[in-house]
Amino acid sequence: MNNQVGSTNECAIFGLIEAISTYLATHRETIGGVNEILAQISSAAIKKKFLKNYSTLTSTHKNILETSINNIRGQSLKAIRECLLSAMGELIWRQDQNEYYSLDSELGEGYRTSNLHTLLIGPSNAKYHHPDFMLGFFLLAPFTFYRDHSHPAPELYVNLSPRTGWRFHGGEWEDFKAGSLIWNETNKVHATRVYDTPFISIFSWVNNINSPCKTFMCKDWKRIESELNVLRGREDKKGSG
Ligand SMILES: [Fe+2]
Image (tube, rainbow, N blue to C red; front, side, top):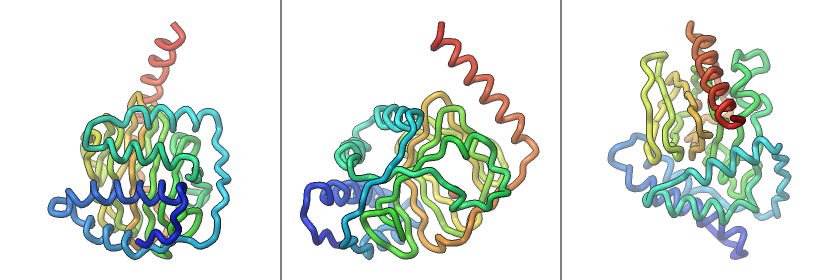
């Protein structure tokens, strides 16, 4: 990756990508795909044009973003957190406006209303350009169920939140802690369950980024969503009481 232009803001995003790369490099041996991601990062080129920041965050999204960044803890994630805070003014935060799913996908309310992402590297809306690779941050509100889905793009997540539930191919739920990595090879079905604090992660799509996601119907979707709604109700009660 070539940081040709040396302004402070561009350096902030460059520094953030460097901090992510340093973290990923420590997992080269254990997680498939990390080497390919590091190679893709190296080949990204800086955009020559000034990128206008047109994030339009709702107050709910602002709150999710602030809380989730405050919750990034631990020495190993400190550099990423600090670089993210430094780059905040230049990042474009957006909601998925059916760019990744067809309109009739049964995604449920949780994902549709609360998803938020920013791209550091990508084909558009990113300071660094790559036609077939994405690196960014992805967030979801507390008590959201991101239903089982798959996509042809191989994907990496770095969980930055204290605890997040994941399941693969509709199997048993497993909790992952901050700093853990999830590697989803092509078309691997995965789902995410967010508990009482918002979900924040680094994500990357390694290639094949123009092929859309598909949901993978599981019988327990409604039950999981109602369980999370009960937990949300309890939390709201605590907050108001
Ligand atoms: Fe995914």
